[in-house]
Image (cartoon, rainbow, N blue to C red; front, side, top):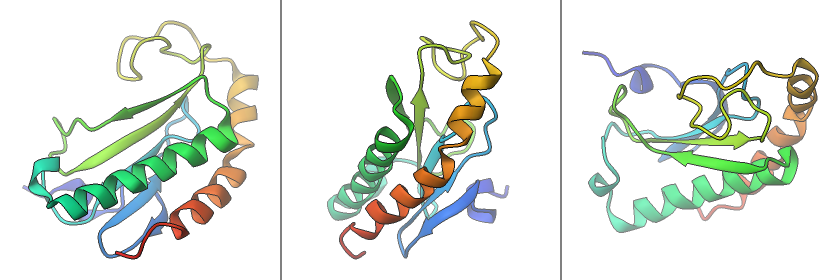
Length: 143
């Protein structure tokens, strides 16, 4: 069985180093949805040694901070599920009180139709998010 995250980036590649990558996910209702993907095929956080776990969580934190800085979400959801893709990755999702699923998870049943103007305004922030991610990820300690 081929692992989709071993075979492809999993989104628009924004950062890659020897250990991990950060991608922007093409999720129409959630502009700014990112994933932090561990490059090596492991399934669980406990598969990593302590230094690798720290590095991964520093990257997740940097992505969250860039999202907060540029997208001004009401909340940021962090999730590492891997039930369908057992390759270690974290979802970093900007959430807004009026988004399609709020207050439920983005994978829960929809609560409302999205506001097209709000989505367009959030999409307009993506260039600033890309720049903030590049700046913050460049500040991570070397792998």
